[in-house]
Image (cartoon, rainbow, N blue to C red):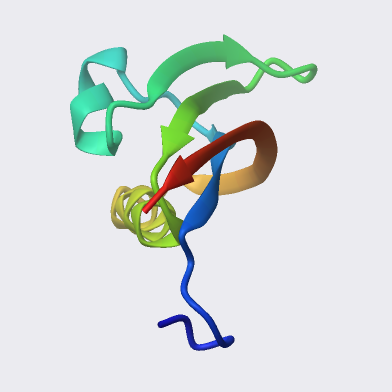
Length: 89
């Protein structure tokens, strides 16, 4: 039962794009819930890393954000793209 009343049987799949200041090697993808890691430079020439992919829930997102915090990386943005697909739980 959801704390907002009723059960969550249909959940929207959410695709995240997280951007941090600094360079994270793509080999760390597994440690970040198998998100795809892309390193690039921003407009000012600073190294940034984008982590993108699907996370199953807010708990998984929190885990990724905690790991970025543990590495002392500066969070620049978190974007959510909601898919039209649903997952039945």
